[in-house]
Every structure is written in structure tokens, then in C-alpha cells.
Amino acid sequence: MGHPLEEHHAAVGATMRSEGEQLVPARYGELAAEYAALINRVGVVDLSAHGRFAVGGKDRTTFLNGWVSQHVKPLIPGTGVAALFLTAQGKVIADVTLDCLTDEFWLTTDAAAAAAVQKKLAPLARAGDFRLADLRAAYAAIGLVGPEAARVIEQLTGAKPDAWRTTLTVEKVGGGVEELPVFAHERLCLGDTAALVARRPRYGLPAFELFVPSETAVVVWKTLTAAGATPVGWDALDVCRIERGVGRFGCDFDDTTLAPEAGLGHAISYTKGCYVGQETVAKIHWRGHDQTARRLVSLALDGDDFDGRPVPARGTPVLADGKEAGLIASAIRHPVTGAAIALGYVRSTALANGLPLTVAGRPARVRETSARNQGRNQEGDNP
Picture 1 (tube, rainbow, N blue to C red):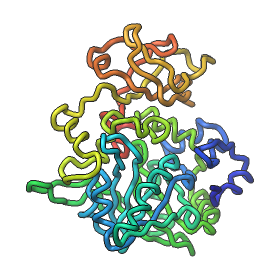
Picture 2: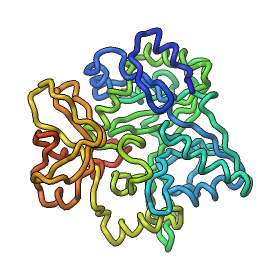
Picture 3: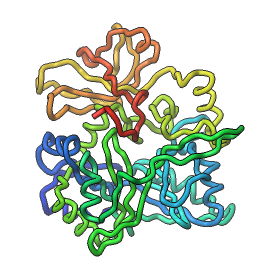
């Protein structure tokens, strides 16, 4: 499936890469400059390869609440949450974001998980008043990422995203209340284009996702760049997520991965009641204190800057005190330091005992900004 900005990327000379069956911009120029834009200013990213669905019908809330790992019933229009679809064994089918609109939910997910989400939800139409519509052809998705993202939104729309709601008070099963972190969204106008603008922190960075009619995507993209946003490809996003220990579906976790192994606790409620996979993740949380046999961590490999040695391939063993203790999931060379950084699964006992790690003959250390500690969508002190 193509997407609305593909021809524009080709016209400006973007280097493309495959994501499943789609092409996405890998980079537009120097990776270091694009990384710097994300960290220090603001970048604009084409996210149209992501899955996008509208979920409607009067049974939509009940059905979704029984399927996903996070609160759905308490959501009010203008709020959204991160959530997971799990197998009965607590393994990850998809990680998604649900945005609550007036009469439907919009669901977004990584490209690699879109087909699985569609397969899970489509049959519900036969069980009640439930409708699922694929929005990928009708709407483009454009990310605005970096510390100046809110400024650009305010400059172009007059809205003040820094004042948007960030929590929602919800009732816990068994009594009491808690504060649920939420992603706010508003319908805004960028010039003559109506957009759904959703706060969507990515990899520890402030960010927004703009859903705009496909025919307006190029105009909106140019409007954002004119306001100071730097075009950024997926390679720079990968640097940000890997150095922060944040996995991505299809790269670092899939339906063979327990949700707690991948540091996905931010997308799980332990107080909402039953959903598919709840028994397993609840046992790990309440009885095991979120401890699993292995966990996803961010690794920095020792070596001279830009020393020419290749970054480790997916599946490369991680050794602890000379014995295999895990595997590399993703790796990339940092554009500033030249060091290889990676995400890998490492046995929890090796981590707890502080055993020396090596990857492909090179010493490796666990970075403190691991997914276990940070949480996938938090904004905070992990730049």
C-alpha cells in the first residue's frame, strides 16, 4: 500500500527503506543533522506507514475494553491511551494507541501489527454493533517530534498544547481511584486543512501526530517545514528509540514476547479488571514484581568512534561472562559518537549479578535509559 507523501519524498531525493510492504523515508540528508533536529529543535516525520483504523458502533467501548490491556471505558472525547492486544498467554499481538472521539475510537499501530489488529477486530462486527474502517487511504499521518513541537502547533493553529490534559481520574476494580496518563487530542485547522492533532510522546521526546486528509498531506508537510520543522527519516527515529531502550513491534518484540519482557508496562492497567492475557501479566506483576527471565535493555558497545566495525546483526548472541545470555534485537551506529548502540534481550540473572557482557567480541554495557525503567512514551529526563 502506497501513501500520500511517497512522490514528494522521491522528488526531494529522500533515501527510502522498506517497512513491511511499504517504503518509508530512511533519511533526507545527513543522519547527524536529522538526529540533532529531533533532540534540540523539531523534526517532521512521515508516519503514514502506520496502521490507522476507526472503530465505531454502540458496542465499541465494551468490546475494546475486553480486548486491550489498558482502561477504555473511562476515556472521554479528547483523550487517548497506549494499550496492547495480547494473546491468552500475555504475549504481544500489537501495541496501539486509542484516541476517543465523540462517536468512535481511532486506533493507530505500527505497520507490522496492522494486519493482526484487523484480523482480531473484524469478526466482532458479527457479534454486535461494532464497525471497523481502515483509514490508511483516506488519511495521512505526520509526526512532529522534538522540544519545539508544541511551539509549531501553537504558531500554526493558535492552540496551546502545553495546557492539554495529561491525566484522567479512573476507578479501580475493588474500590479507590487512580490517575491514568492520557494523550490529549484536538481537531484544529492548519490554514485551510482540518487535522486531528494528538499528543503522542515518542521515545522520551515531546511529539504530536497529525492526521490529515491524504490529498492535503503535501501542503501540510510544506507548511510544517516552513514553520521550522526539519524533515526527518526513520533512521533518526531508530537512533532515538534504541539509545532510550524503546522497542518497536516487528523489530524488538512480537507475538513470541511477553509484554513485561519488552518494558511495555506503561500500556498495561493492573486495576481495570479482565481482558485477554490479563491473568499472565497480572501474575508477573503482583507475584513476580515484574521480573521475567529476560528483559529488553539498551546496550552501548565499546569501540573507537566510527572504527569501521559493523554494527551487530539481529540475532547476534550477547555473552555474559563468556556464556550466551541473550540476543541482539536492533542495532545502529550513533551519528554523533560513532559508537554502535543496540537493543537486546539479556537474562535477568546476568543483569542482576552484574556479569560482564560482550557482543561480537566487544565489551558492552547496559545503558541506564532502558525500556524497563523509562517506559515507551514518557517525556522526561532521558534525552
